[in-house]
Length: 364
Image (tube, rainbow, N blue to C red; front, side):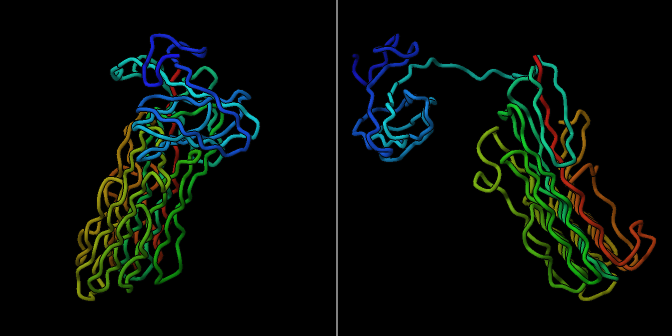
């Protein structure tokens, strides 16, 4: 057999072409440590019985992965730890790979079709479609604060975008509802998360009522502050790989924006701050001015350029703001105020909008 760190032109000792067979070990127990060194490269540990298991390449750092898969180990190692069913036989191979460059616009030559999913259920990939999809996931918007004076707008839900995400068969979907409205003189509620398989986008924050110092913290985009006194909007939450995004499909998060503050020294006519949106912070509330919600995140994944997760506008005693951009799904609710001609009726804020999942799939 060639030296372990020598990459031959073809396989040595059997296996796939350009895969160098190294050695096999017997799993006399389910957990075995194998003193075997190697340099960085592509490796595969394969089960003779095609059982599931896990392998760790241990050096100054550790890289792990499932059995029966090719793993890119970017460091040298001195030991291999294996978890597999007892009495299995597992074999290590090192792969030879050629250099490549990125293939630009890989989906451009294929027919594509959007699926806008607004109710919980399943996305079923057509049998003749590529096993890779692009997806946009929006959490439910937060509701506006409720008061007979100016209240803060609700924050828009978070937006997660996936590119070339592996989807085969059926993917479960849960659509997050918008935050509900509480009674008079109450803060708004945080919206609910939307799931596409294991990936999710969290809901937006609720706006503050007129008399509180500030809205509840939390939510993808923060709720706006209430109109009474000088108070601050909530800070939005930025999702990470460990909080819903995962690592597959080159995930990108749009959110983490802040709700607007208020400045008015207790004037009952001061308007609440706007909720943060998927595309920007909410604006501050002053004496019957500003307090608009943050702009939405804009995407054409559905086939039409639309705004997702706009922040809800704040209200004052006698007026309210309009949404600052197109509001398709996931926008925050308006803050409540006294004037019954606002278009939303009474002292209560309005609920946040529900979330959505938009999937674009490709057929050769």
